[in-house]
Image (cartoon, rainbow, N blue to C red; front, side, top):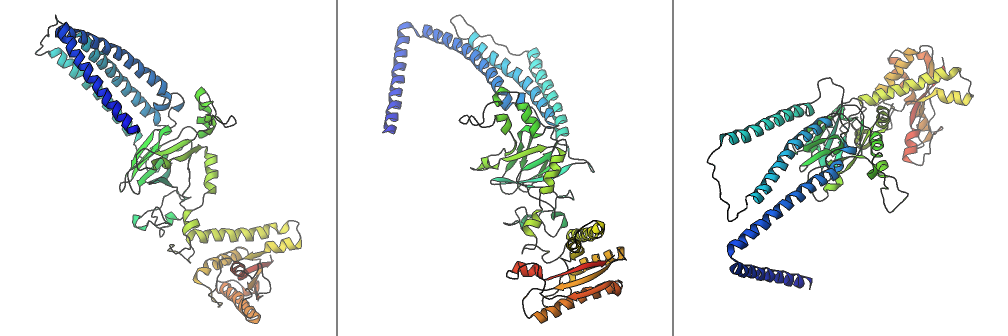
Length: 506
């Protein structure tokens, strides 16, 4: 029914227009076509002048109204070191193009009004005018040359890459439908290599796990950056064209599948600083939720954002990510909480090429932990404490000394921590230790006791072979008689199967 009414309305409008046209023709015949044409030309000329005035007024009013939101003035001035250069280039370009815009529109509509056809009007023919040719060729050439040179200088400054050895942070942003996957380097400060053929559900970036540079990289949910520190963003796309866009920092770079790009910038205002600037503007001192008088003000809820500036699909809007610019101290505290993606997701899974092996950094961490435990036991020995507390400090577990299943033969990876114990005994020649072997309660108890003794003896033999005096070593097997966890679960039995040593003199 609605469609029928719309169709009839359109038909009626067409009929009315046709009738008006017939009436106009009839009126022209009565009054004379020349008189009617002159009156129409005069009315149209006046209408054009009115349109010109209204159009220019609206252009300036709308620019003034939206300048703080769309043009980067007022509260939304650039928050990066290079942003002022781009804003200055934009202002200069806007000045020249604005002048041309106003002059050409005034000339266009004024000429339509001034030179409308009348009974007495007569056209003037200019075959050529050298002065005009020079003017409208030279002025645009000079202006364009100035804008191009200024643009090239700005481009060379803004798009300059980091210099070798320059202090900076390098991160990576991979766009896909529909999110940004962020990657940061760990303590080594280097992003590990990638290989697109290795992309999988558990390895979304195709990191090469054989390369140690990937071991400490982590994947955060938010983009955190320290204020005043140069940042190099490596930009990649995994499927279609995306665009890495940080509007408040004047950062915008395409993410092209198969063609990595980059952008270098230095944030100059923390999120908190930017919020405090926004609170000076009335439009940001209103509740974020107008229906909730207790909601926070707009300036309090402000956050920088990372967006995609390409229409990459129907869920394009969901690529928005929060960006937090913080002090160096806050950034360091945030870094300390981040966990390696390899360690939390890949390590010792079927996708880990190093499954069952100790890696270099793990060996180093284990060495530091063992040395710390021994140093603490020896240093704290002079502090007043109960006998139980002192005994607990002097009992140290060798978590990474393992044996083949059902055997007292050391596994190949056990040598690293056994060698660490050798180094400790060499560093402290006055101490003696008692090596303890323990098992879970699986199997016959007498067999377990024998096995635990054999394993303790195996450690003792290893240490003697490395040059440690046998008089400083004692080995004893306890079987399953001293569990530290329940033997009812696999986890508990695994903790009960252990080798540890006790410092018995120093």
